[in-house]
Image 1 (cartoon, rainbow over the protein chains, first blue to last red):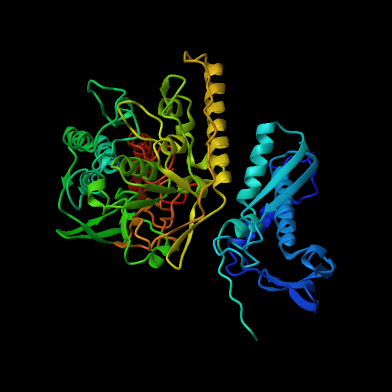
Image 2 (cartoon, chains in turn green, purple; image 1 turned 90 degrees about the vertical axis):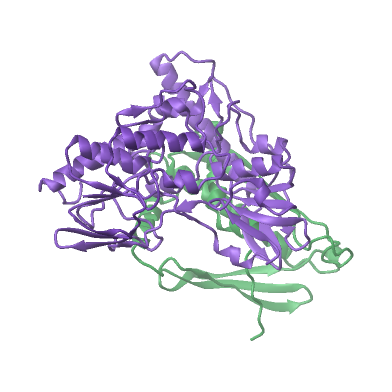
Length: 184
Length: 410
């Protein structure tokens, strides 16, 4: 299926092999992703990510990644990092983009460039408690892709659609998820 | 040997067995064409046009080849077939157990016991309505009706209706209930969009003539997916109308995303509806491209190529309240599955699916199935799809009985 001359830097064969191997390994497909957040000051916090669980054992990134989160000055904060809701945009855009590369590789489509602009609209009356009919979160998100590839427009549209269909972040944002918050 | 079920698939199998003079009996829990008699809604018509209704040695010979049979007509058609084929049917004989014994099977029924060397399971693909587990969270004030229980709108309480699922079943029920004057919200996940007619001919003529429907199970790229696909959004009406989401929206049906949770008395819908529709539009157009390429290659005389409006979606609501009195009923059109509680042979997987290779149950020599989705071909569950499958299955079975088969197919 994969066309050898196409190279988007995705090892699709490894992914397909993994899917086959995991069919016979119940439990190995269960992953647990983790992040640890530490309050610094005001609305400023630092979140680090290194370990996760998957394929039946503890796993680790090659290094610890750190992310600063804060709020902009117009919220009377010091803007030492991006706003937490903006991290959702990061997750959505990067997940869909990774998916496009993987699906393109699998379909033998050579990508030359993929760019995404992501926007999310929100009415802050919700978080400010001004109007209980307004939700806290985004009321809509929009991703605009610009894709240059050896493929027809129809094939590119199909790529983008398939990427959404297989995206974990797209699913997490478009569908409800049970969230449990406890105090240790 | 024993055939379980006297629907069109079991009767087609019986006919092929008779042609080969293989001694057999067809055990039927109720009457011939039982599911068509007792487990379908009142207004249902076949999705396939009459001229496509054919079984081994039998075909539609009425005056309306382009029409679609009502349930009464299907029952009559299948019953006439049973008589014409001289099928050895025992009605009112429900199979309660099939067990492996020695070199064959022991079949226990409500009317005695059979020993046989081979069994063909033709008990249908739609014995039970599949309903998602979130049904348990539906408030007690809401009536739940499955597609197997539904007969007509008058059976539902007054008030709004949430129809879950947009296969042929879901779109037909949503349309009919909307026409009864109720507010209808249709929850749409992955679906298969098709126009009723394409380039002047029934779209199922194209499926048949172009060979798409004949594609074999071992040539399908993702067989598990193909076997789990929802039925296409089609309805059989005298006016040959298309019943896609655009048509439903125009009729006043509210379209929302896939039902993803019921929480605190609210039904929550996925925000991914636009992509589900984009995928369905893309796949429909790809299929129409296939038809066009075939028509050009073969020089088929048909009306000019056409493309249909993309699915138009207004911003859909992401939740609705089930406790306000606005909605009184949920109709679950979330699919069907076979029921194998009586099959005491370990050939059913954890998801309740029979493990088979093109209808040959390789783990249990002498056991066969027919009439399941994409059993041997894409057309396997349609009436005219039974003939080729029955011939293949009976051919394998005859070899097995003759002692030169029974080992797994390559």
